[in-house]
Length: 80
Image (cartoon, rainbow, N blue to C red):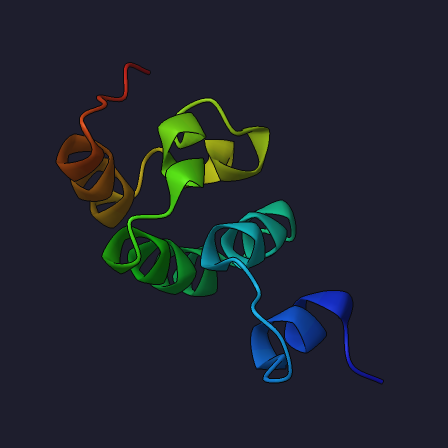
């Protein structure tokens, strides 16, 4: 049985915000997929990225260098 995250990621019939998919992957601690979807959100100039460093689903990503680089590109910094 597919998980909700997999269904969101595979959704081709309608637009699904890559930021929301990233949040779902972040919530289940799948850093690799969360970061992939965050990059898609960045390429789309997704307005959800304004909450990037405040979103609880991404807290586990803070130590990841790719996340820190993305945060800097968006204009945020991470202070742990």
